Length: 140
Image (cartoon, helix red, strand yellow):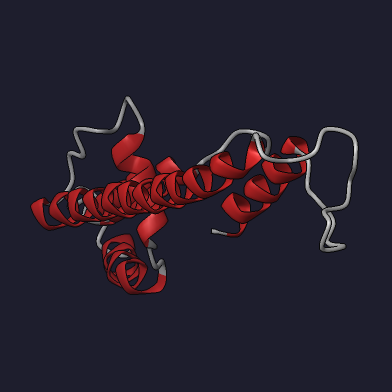
């Protein structure tokens, strides 16, 4: 069980325990204890945004049959994550387009055998430029 991701199970299990604490069929001595535990559980067990997103993305739980506020919160978080991802992709593609246009103009003007330009600067091969570009993408 430690090898399988369980983020998507946090919200359902919390809700399950809260629902168990509200069982009115319990004996008179147990009912106040379970009620107290159920109330404390809501405040003590903090659910983070990643749990909402994981629950919303899980195929069996995506209907999110919990409170409407929780479902709305999960949908909003998911939309924000998609927007962040789209913005990141746009920045990367713009960066790649700018780098490709400036470097592609210089590729065919490089000397074939020498690794130094007449100015004494080291000339980067196409592979070196590709590796530099990959490093820039990782930093972004």
